Image (cartoon, rainbow, N blue to C red; front, side):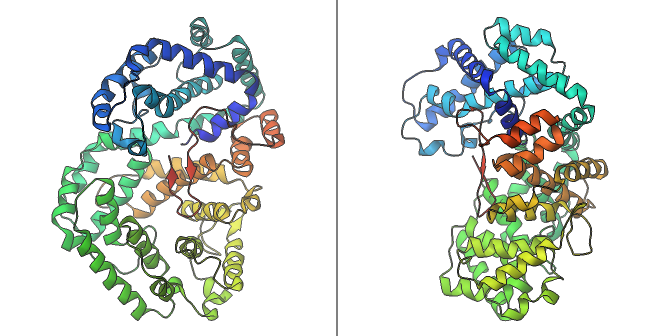
Length: 497
């Protein structure tokens, strides 16, 4: 998902010749894997049994075209279960699987190779492109177009350096986590504590973001979640987005790791949490914003919905709580979460307009040319940047952020934090959290396919003529561009595959 915006820019700039390339590639691969593309209708179980062999045939063909095993690692879903919506298909054949799920990934692999050629990366030379031309995959017109882009970059070397740094981010984070595989897994061997589960949750979120779960053994974590429900079904003081509720961490990890848990017992616990929040706070949504947020996220994971009268008790607040002298003490991310909660529980259009305007006005004080601050006079933060970007998307007001240089701050922060990151029981939560939110920012910039977001990428990563063409384009994200177009849910922020 980190390359989707880059692919959109390349696709738009080379639109006159790139469609021929898509067709040629499709024809070549279908011809060479035809014996696997059985039209026989298969059950999901039968498809699962044939998936490994089917995928290996595709990988073997890509290796023949010059790709390495390392380049193809973590690219394809490891098994059928990773293909989110396949169980809803009315008809399933290997050919359908290829057309709907595998082919878009293959287009991305080749687009990445074209970009590597542009920036002289991973040993992609003109000779390798000529090899693809000889295979009748890459048209000559596209090679000429790529050469022109390469020449544009030579005139603006700072842009090629920016793009190179951006393109290796994924490799850097995967390398960092794989090098520390033993340390990460040993975290499970330490005596469990509240902070331990929080740390594993934050680490898992990054592992999940890059789809590298298969490299780690979470057996002990699964066993802990299954056998120690009473221990992790608990609340903590001083909850924040980087210090999440223990019970939420347990519910989330159990959900993602397919751990069977007693949902009825958890729902009873959540009902107790509800009562405590209502009793303790006059205006829970303002005084206990993050607690309320994790409560609603937990009920959502369990598909447990409160009646409206109970939701209102958690979300109502007197006007005094929306005065400037109160809101100024809240974190930037908390201000956005207040609006996000109203959206999540479908109350955003029922809240008094002055309350929404007060939150937005306070948010605007945190946005500066140097970055987005977590407090009015505080530090720049990836967490704050993510939530402000998401707020712009949620409220359809991204144009308000188009003149800020967000990308440079995000990338610089990732490199700095990766250098500092060490995996142990003493790992700094802020560091892990900032790394996670930095990549979540990049997800928004790439997967929210609006002109404002793509221009952020074009301005920082591409030469002026390419940026100008993107800015003049009426539409971002061509409908016939065949790589994946992941979306972001405008209410939850979740990636939609």
